[in-house]
Length: 377
Image 1 (cartoon, rainbow, N blue to C red):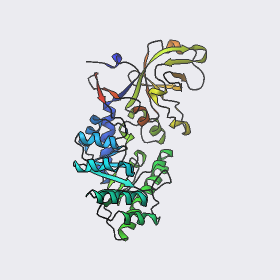
Image 2: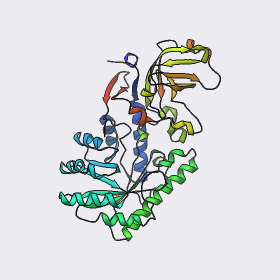
Image 3: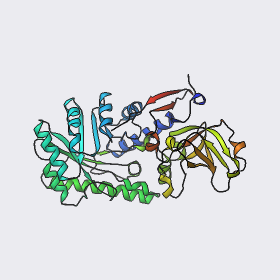
Image 4: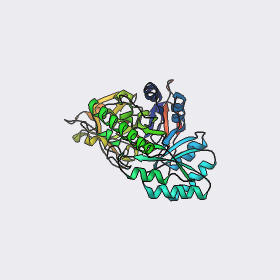
């Protein structure tokens, strides 16, 4: 049995007890709110993680790439929402999945793409299920709920090559919140906007059965979800420092960390140097614009205990710089001798996980096992 002290560093480590607690918390909340839950698996891209989510009650998954859709379908997951705007060049891959029995849902937010999907489907004898992406917070892509364009796109999806499955939205600006009041407000704005869009389509005479919303902050903050049929969220499975600053998790909920080893010191600067740089942590500095900046990550002991005041304050490609916030630590070499094993909690779990081909998973018995992670587009 391999134990954590025997792992080569850097390594992406999952605490399975924390992960399962996060899964149960989210699924329990969705059940209490009376909606289906479709987790976004772009965070883990890992079959054992997704199996745990489905075992807890998830219905279908959300993916960010067609490669994910293909790989999870091969593994037996059939109900899949591809939550990135569809382009004509990807339609043959989508068709291949549908013909093999995948219940694949595509999304669009424009008439041109809707027409391309409908035409391609008609030419190949397939009616693609398409959802319209709604913009409820000026965050990224999508159609405003009250925009006339919404009904034009709905009309473009009424041929024999496509059928409208519903509307979906993602309140990404919820990541900018840091109070209960702000989270409640953006959650309701997300819900109300999606429900309004669906009702406008129905009033226009088209079917619109699905209303899908979700982000980790809004899923964990919504007071009620009247009119919503399903929720999507992803990073909750691991959580991270950005979510800690938003206020939807605590430090001891963060299930992903990077195991690293101290390889040197700059004593006069109060630095310890580790073998995990930005290639191991990612360049994501998401906490930099929040009330508490964790640099490239929060330093923890090998057992996961937070070492208050110590962060990864700098990073080169393969070198990380650990230091104490505020006054430099002139005894850092004594505190962290060469060979000391530490764990670093990430700013953004999705970005850090993407640096690794596999996770090293901590089991309750103290052993570890490797879980592979999917790659590619």
